[in-house]
Image 1 (tube, helix red, strand yellow):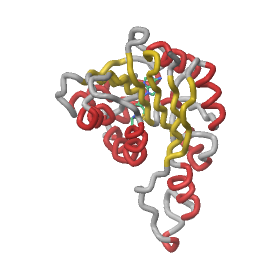
Image 2: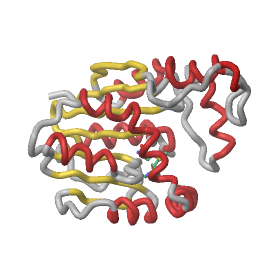
Image 3: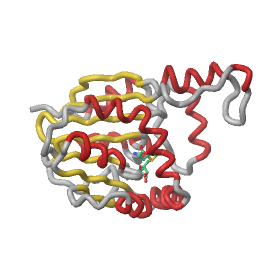
Length: 227
Ligand SMILES: C[S@@+](CC[C@H](N)C(=O)[O-])C[C@H]1O[C@@H](n2cnc3c(N)ncnc32)[C@H](O)[C@@H]1O
């Protein structure tokens, strides 16, 4: 499985924890907007270290959390970070979700959706498993308007989806989800050094770094399953 080949290696090198730290800057703002209630069931697609579910159990008292990932090593790591029996980690692919129709209250996904082999099929699957009125919170930092992220494709041996904001909305609607909200959540925590320190190994100028983190940040698109 191509996902396992790529991401098992990331997990073995501890990149799951690094992503958790970086992605939390914007993930927490997306999470805080999700209308989740105590006792509800949440599915985290491409769960990585599983930090989203740990946070939801601690702060929102969700009843059950499922972290789905295609990488067995990511899942092994995620399991080792919590002994909470209400959180389960499941191997699977975005295009065929191993959950019953109408069985999930909310789906969350952070920096993972763009790896779907067939994103329209993934959205159809999300719409199927969500109960009426359930929500899909989809955060991506790799998207058309965020031009400084496009080079990431060269570093990953999986074809990544580079949609723009409109394409996300259109695809959600085609899958039968209402689009309730869409915005770019700025990353205000990644430190941006003073002008005098540029160029750096990773950034040609301060302006570019500012655009990437403070202006584009993470694109959040929120879908709602119809009643
Ligand atoms: C960039 S990591 C993000 C992890 C975590 N959501 C975070 O915010 O740090 C993407 C994760 O999605 C998983 N993934 C990517 N494509 C997948 C697919 N088609 N099916 C299942 N898991 C997938 C990878 O194994 C990886 O753990």
